[in-house]
Amino acid sequence: QRQMGELPVIVIDHPKVRAAVSFQGAHVLAWQPAEAEHPGLWLSENSAFTPGVPVRGGIPICWPWFGPVQAPAHGFARTMQWDFTAHNENEDGVFLTFTLRDSAETRKIWPHEFTLIARIRLGNTCEVELEAYGQYQATAALHSYFTVGDIAQISVTGLGQHVVDKLAQREEYTDDDKLVFHGRTDRIYTEPEQCSYIRDKKLKRTIEVVHFHHSDVVCWNPGAALSADMKDMPDDGYKTMVCVESARINHPMAPQGDKPSHLSVRISLSPKIA
Ligand code: TA6
Image (cartoon, rainbow, N blue to C red; front, side, top):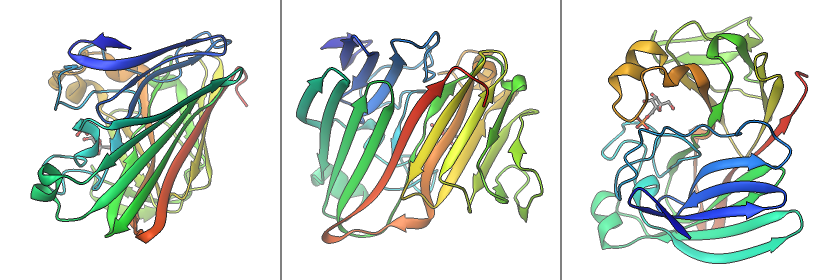
């Protein structure tokens, strides 16, 4: 266990993987399989790393709402301290479990009882499985930030045809079967496939993002102007990152007491541009 700024984090140095996970938000901050030349996840060095402030990068867990529906934006799960409830490791990697339960503090902003479990597996793949109990509806996202060589030289596929463009405020069926980035992009794909692929010509690799129990996939890149405006991001930070997020927006998570609702992601890196 170490500190990153003011945040206590678990640092993993295992023959198969190097990674870091913060107790705040059960947040995977970094993940790089031993055989990978570059980090899988992108993390802003300008993040505050202060309790109660979201970290920019890694895999923030946005829950129990996605976006600025109410304060705090993207819910409170990403800025709260979670309990570290289990730890296991073997030759393939490290498995960590975190739990967050309702408290007087959460009930002030969201009036529900809940238990939220995050199971994190770090090895050759990076997996985050979210399991929610209680009786409510909650939108959510595993807001993964990926490292790319150059945003202008990547494409994302497996997104499906139906897109809500949050910037143009337009909803449409598109013929494009791949997304390329020409500036600020903020899109919710509402009929996505199970698997998204980020093909990266510069780093010569493909990131495979397998979504489970998702209803939507969100793609985000802030572009130059917003990147320069955000104080927790380097001015040119947008060039080396892309968010491809496994989400439940149009079909919120709806656990029924002890019958849980899930949202998960499994990420792997392949050295080929498939
Ligand atoms: O997932 C895309 C998005 O909702 C964008 O609209 C953008 O604001 C981004 O997430 C980051 O949100 P944050 O609250 O972390 O600044």
